[in-house]
Length: 97
Image (cartoon, rainbow, N blue to C red; front, side, top):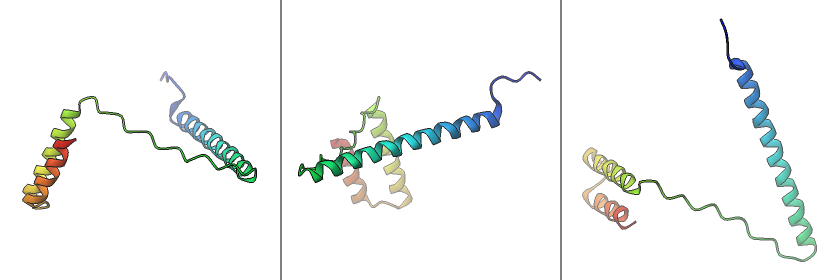
């Protein structure tokens, strides 16, 4: 049998190394940021605001997404999970986006 690549154990080991390295780097960056903020507070400077999460990227085909959501709403209404009024409210919200 002629195998290609590292095999299952090799791939798992590589994944563990990559995950461990990423975790260590992330922890070190966080420690440096906390130390920097502590220095700024000690110097009387206000701490910088927390970073805002990135805005969601628009979907490639937003129309397909809305249609899928409307279909799910209709299915919930047919199952009796949503009332007609709840369905209409959610439908109007989706179409207004």
